Each structure stands twice: as structure tokens, then as C-alpha cells.
Image (cartoon, rainbow, N blue to C red):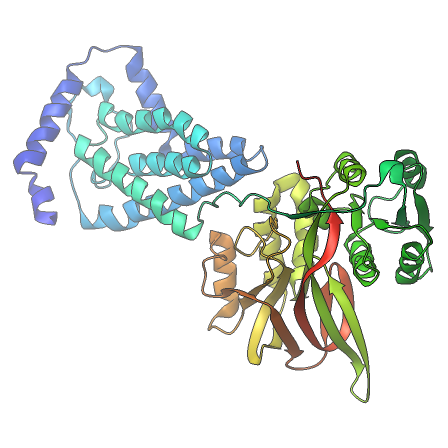
Length: 498
């Protein structure tokens, strides 16, 4: 192929010259200046970096599309300039092939084959389009204009542009393996049943943790107006949350337990509701409202609607058996887990991600938080289901979370009978470098260091000293062993059915 392209014989050379003559016959005008300016704007990817910077101002999928486009462009540029321009040397068009006034200045000196501008343009537009199809369609004419400008200004032969465009398209497709486009999350499915209806809160006891979530001085009064016939108990500093919630649940006339607070408070209330066979009404009083969101009551309006109609569903509950303390006098705890548990660097990761999320959006904040956390952190040695691992993160979700990668966000089904086990391991050679590379390229989910498993029972023991365990946001140091299991259909919770 190198000899063929150096001598430029045959049909390819003939077709290139025919197309170049057709371009040379176009009358001069303002379009010449336009294509020279467009070509110059795309030098060294400046045009695409500028567009990506504007897109990055919009959080969510638009920002993710910008990053995806830049990754695709980077791959295309590297392959074109480092590999193919070295392997396939070719002279660029001469003034005899095109009017001199059209030539871009200064004329490039590298190999004509293939067109790096075309590769970058197509890669960026397709990379963006894989995440935001509408934006990709809007960028397609710009990418096509850049590609054509390289012929119009005499910088490349038409076949150079076609080959470069093919490289760009291939680079964009390769990035789907590095940073796959997330499929849509499954629709929420709930195992519906009927619970006592609570008109105006009749028969409802609500426990409010005044130290957690989004509590304000007017919270209790506001809830009393919404549920005028409910019993409401505020839990203040120094009070035993579990005992106070149990006191609410056992009051005469209480047929349903309500809770306002963070994940830890909701988890305690769920355990109490299960123990006393009461349906649970989760009010969105936490900072993130994880269970309220998954239960379909992310707003007070939704919670009131479900309670007044008696609409409910069942959820599995995680059962956590913990041994902590000194070996000769261990302490045994039995806990309920509604959402998640973790060991290792995950709590630090979540804290950093939440701090960065308002400015960067969830996907990019997650990448930056992971890089910062793992750059400074150290792995933990754990024995998971009898197998020793060095782990950066051990994460357990009560139920199947989505997306199926390192950043679980949504749980559409609350009664699927599984524990969602995710481990990011440091067992492999060059563990930290591999991890940081995966974070930088957005490939943690598909990397060999990430392991996803679904099971109904998990045991974890420390490999070298006590470990720190977090369950539904509550941190416990000095843990010597922990076992997770699933209690299927143990909790009834209020949830609007439509």
C-alpha cells in the first residue's frame, strides 16, 4: 500500500485529480474565505475544544457528550498523526491542481494521507452524537464542512479526507467500549398490595429526627398541617433514635409508621416497622432521599397520595450481622439495610462526588471524585466469601442498582431478592496505575479491576485488622466480621401506584 500511494497510480489517483479539477472550476467568492477560516479554526482541534467547553457548561448528558466527543477526537488524532501519516507518506496537492488563491497558508508539510482534520471532525461529531443524538446531528454539517475545507483549500486529496473520516468514525465506535453509552434504566416495578388508608393521617405515627436530613424548626408543624390526625414525635440530640421510633410504633391506635430523616433514620424505622408488622411511610426528609426516591415518594405530595389511598408495595430488606470490638469481648449487632453498605474508599468517594456534583454534574463529578480518592487512598485487604482480595472499594446494594458500573444511582425494583456486590480490586499488577488510567479514560466499569456479582448472602472479614463498615450512611469502626443476607418481602411501604 505504501508503494501504491507513493507513486499515486491507478484509479484512486485518477479519481482524486478529477474531483480536484471539479473543485478548481468553482468560481471564486466569499466561500473561499469561509472555508479557509473554517479549516484554520479546526487546526489542532481548537474548534472542537471550544464547542466542548460550551457544552460543558450544561450539566448532565450534554457535558457527558462533550467529554465523549473529546475522547473520540483524541483517539482519532493519535491514530492519524502517529500511525498512518508515518506509514503512508504522500505528497499534498500542488498549485497546478488548484487555483493558488484557494490554498491554505501556510501549507502543511506532513503526509497528505490521511486527513487529520477530517478524522478529528468526524470523531468528535459522532462521539457527541452517541450520547446526545440531537447535538451530533447539529454538529454533522460543521464536521462535513471542515472535511470538505481540506480539499477546497488544497491541503488534501479527496481520498485523504475519506480515509481520515473513516478513521474518525472508527475511533468514535472504539470509545463506546471505553466509555459505553448507558442503556436506558428499566422501568420501576413494584409488588403492589393494599395497606391501611390514612385519611388526614389517622392511625399514622411519624418519627422526626431533628438532627438529620433537611430538618427545619417548622418541619413538625408543617407535617401536622398535612396530617392533622397523625401523632408526631420529634427526636432530639442525645435521645435514642431506635427507642424513640419504637415508642411511636407501639402507641395505641398506630396502624402505620412514618419517618422523616436521613438514610440511617429511615433504616432504623424500617427495622421497627418490620418488627411490629407495620407499613412504613417514608417522607422525603433526607438530604438525598435514596429510599423515598426508589419507593416512589420523592415528594410530600406523592407520599400523601399513597397514604390517603392505602396504596403500598413490598420490599426486601437486607439483614446485616456484625461482630465488632475486642476479640475476647466481642459485640454482636443485628442491623437492617435498606439501601447500601460499603467498605474501603467508597464513603470518601461519595462525599467528594456530592461536593463536586453541583458544579460538574453527576457523571463528571464521579470521574473527578474517583481520581482524587484513588490517587491518595490505599487498598484494604478483605476476605469476601472466603476469597482474599486487596480492594479499593467493596460496595453492596440491597437490590439491583443501575447503571451496572461503578456509580450506582437508581434501583427500579425493591423486591428482586438479590444483593448487588461490586468490587474494585487492587490484586492486579500496577494496580494504582491501572485504576487511575481507567478513571481518566472512563473505563472503570469495563476494566478487569471491576467485578460485579449478584447473590443473596455475603460474608466479609478483614485481612489485617478491624475494618470500617458503613451501612445506609452510618459508619461503624472496629468491625471484625460481617454477614449480609436478604429477607424477602419483609417490608411493606406506602407507594403511589399511578
